Length: 194
Image 1 (cartoon, one colour):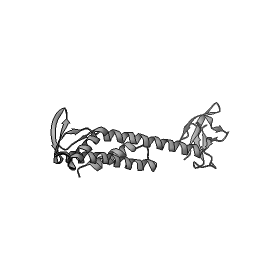
Image 2 (cartoon, one colour; image 1 turned 60 degrees about the vertical axis):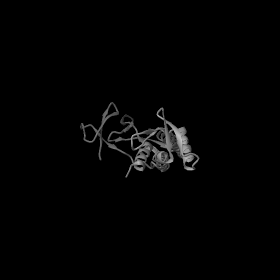
Image 3 (cartoon, helix red, strand yellow; image 1 turned 90 degrees about the vertical axis):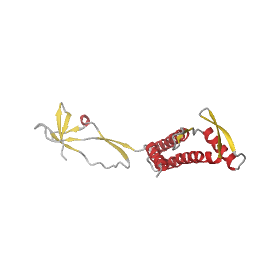
Image 4 (tube, helix red, strand yellow; image 1 turned 30 degrees about the vertical axis):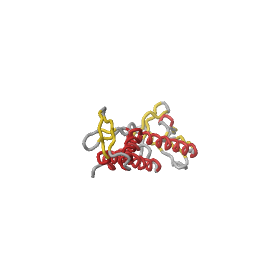
């Protein structure tokens, strides 16, 4: 596609697809003997192009690519995305969960451990029932009452790790920018009642 350059005082002032003035000169974009595989190529501002009596020649800045630096930067970004993803999963894992009846259950690591221990104690059975404090009130629970809560907790925690793994796989395949939405979509799909 032909472009034209309007020259004022020996410098390109405007580039257009149509000839804005009879004195405008055609612009030539020289073929480059390098590729983006080996060099960073950027078109210089029009004011820096070379003006000849019959034409204007566009100029470029070519910078040889530093593949080691690019690889190091990509690895650093990947490692940061992995660390950020782990923190994002931890937040989801320990942020609590809501049971089908609307009861909110704490899911921090201590709560996970206490619930698992209580379920194990009732399952062995070391006890037929245990006293449990929930929302500031004392209740007595049996294995049949605590089992669905323990299952919901285990499902929630495992879903968080499975979603993290799916987002991790995306990061490792080069898609680190969108890890949160990959995690959120995976977690939602895993936990959906379907």
